[in-house]
Length: 284
Picture 1 (cartoon, rainbow, N blue to C red):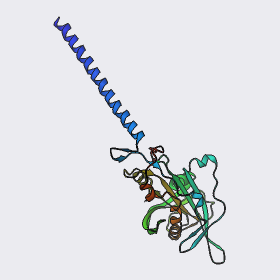
Picture 2: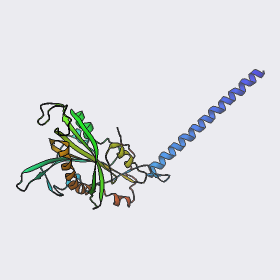
Picture 3: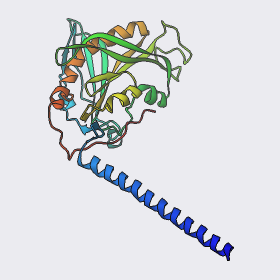
């Protein structure tokens, strides 16, 4: 009899443990549902900005001026690139791919630059960058470093230092004019040269991991990031290419920022709670 009684006691104990586990699970689920509901009602939870609201452009990227003025003048040439619908989906919420030329006083073209802007008002996309896309297209990366442009004038008249990732490529084909072979790598060898940076909620990031950190800053109600990519449209040594890209960037950035969201204005405004954004930037 004592054995039967012990078995009943053990069974009752097990049942009590199971009921306790179920109740604990229900409490956890309840807390999770409550937190989710709170996040859906408000982008701020416990004083932390847990959702980002899409930041609107001040004007379409296509309205970037056709004339960019710095120490020299650059003029847009030809129509903006018009991608297929399939490619368009990969280029962001808004994008601009345009060629600018620098001419001498006689009208002779001295340099050509390609501008590639990709704007995202959500954190759901991995920005397309040359070290991924160009390599995928068969280019061979030969040099890669982060270079900082000091005292770059912004759209609001202030100045800042802007980190840019400066990359040089050879092609995988020896038949490409100006490229001797995929094995070139000396400082005086000719390369295809390109540089890019990201503007993220009014700040600058030189790589995609920095984009993630700046995008999800807890004190920012709105979120956006825009890749600014400048390509010198000819092959030349890196030492020759960088000053040209830097000079173009000095002329272009104030005008580009005239299109991008006004972060000061947005920071002083009330968020629109229906336009919530809680996606994730991939930093692979």
